[in-house]
Amino acid sequence: MRKLFKFHGGVHPPTNKTQSNDKPIAPVALPSKLVIPLHQHVGNCAKPAVEVGQHVFKGQIIGTPEGRLSSAVHASTSGTIAAIDMQQVAHPSGLPDLCITLIPDLKDEWIPREQRDWRAMSHTELRHLLRDAGVVGLGGAVFPSDMKLYSSQHKITTLVLNAAECEPWITCDDLLMRERAADILQGAEVMRELLYANEILIGIEDNKPEAIAAMRAAVVAGKHERIEVVAVPTLYPGGGAKQLIRVLTGIEVAAGVRSTDMGVQCFNVGTAYGAWRAIAHGEPLLSRIVTVTGNVGKPQNFEVPFGMPIDELVAQAGLLPDTTGYIMGGPMMGFRLPSTQVGVIKATNCIIAMSDALFPPAPPALPCIRCTRCAEACPADLQPQELYWFSKAKNFGKAQEYHLFDCIECGACSYVCPSHIPLVQYFQFAKSEIHMREHDKQAADRARERHDYREYRIEREKQEKAERLAAKEKAALAAKPVEPPVVATNPDAAPENTAQMKIQAAIDHAREQAAAVKPKNTENLSAEQLAEIAEIEARRARIREIAKSDVEPPKE
Image (cartoon, rainbow, N blue to C red; front, side, top):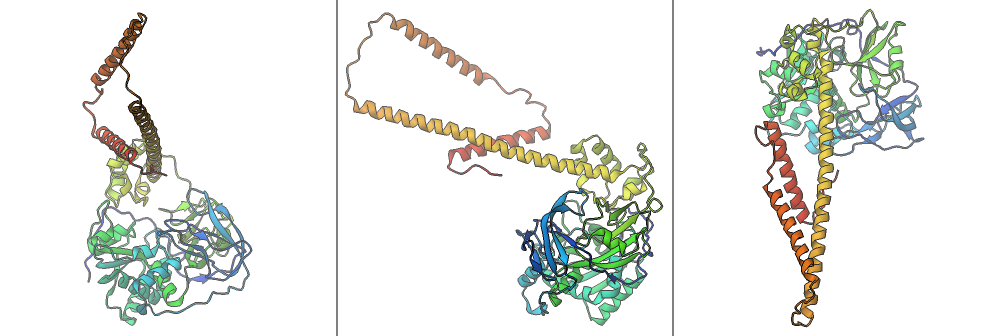
């Protein structure tokens, strides 16, 4: 039996999983329209590959990957492209993004699909196939999977499949493992081969006994000798990548370090399933399992095509009339949807219908009493109460010193806070402000560099022009016959020469005074100020070097 380890902190919120995990995965009726965003993944937005009015088949690419970090987007069913425009999407910001509206023809006609033997394919071919199939992380990060399947400079010894599903209310991975365990394991084997990993550990929280049994039975039936299914203690947020790696392997992934640097790579079980369907059956990622629960009459898991409007999805689960809103994700890390017209996307693992009975309004926040419960619950071993003070005071420098960006925004601190302070919201605010200021600083630096380069260029052109004129005058004097000097006899010339001498003396005196002036406030500077001065001097030196050459100035 494998030895398990503990991570710092954690909480035990009510799981609320039995409402939706007692029924099998159900298909959904095709909606009246599909609104499919082209930016459902980390990286560059996919580029539209279709035109308005064009007929498309199910599985056809409608958005091609743009750049190295991107992923393809496909038609979730057959039909006609009605629009390619900016529409509101399922995102905390509520901002619009580029979407393709598809009107289904109700025929659900597939593109030609090809079954492949993955063992006969090269690693490069497999990665390209996953990229073109739109396979991304389905645990919430939606990072393109092909980019995570390169063998890094640090050898990957262990592949971890994350099946913890620690967030309350969500049961999509639970049902997926119960019903499609064999395909999950096949996808995991392909990933292990691409990473040259020695073993696969599948971590499942022990409140999912049916899923654990199904996965273990599939391991035996498929003779997967390098796969081990491990039941881990139920503790939120045990499904965080760093936390699960710690529990399974004992490896502590430090701040600023990637798990791959420690020899471990992590994927969600849904991602492994999607990878196998793409490779072995030629099916791109068109749909996913979504838990629909909360204030509905028939909580259940559905297989939902991407782009299906939320209102049509929850209607199939029997939406109750006193619903007050919808959460995408779980109550700890999810967010409230801006509209019911937005479509299901690759990151949509759960839709919770809210009501005042299930989710009563939060009481007003009270002053922090420094009880340190938040610090005890924090899985990243931070000091949330200190981060709260710094974030509230907009002292972002101190917040970063206290490792603000190590916060995984799990909500454990807010959950245990007796003063009901929305701590995570303060941390999100601080992070966004820091990112914005850094972006503005970079933009200002680029503008300053362009301005400084322009000034140096103008000065250099003046010098070159003066040198050319001087050379021309020198050449003209050399060509002119030499005449004996004429002694000035005009008495009025003496005062003029005297005035010129006085002017030159004043100019020399001003230069001497300027040279004698020393910079002020150069003592007792902080390390931050010294670093900023060094950065400015380095930038000026670089610009002088650029100005001396014919290299183009930096562009945005």
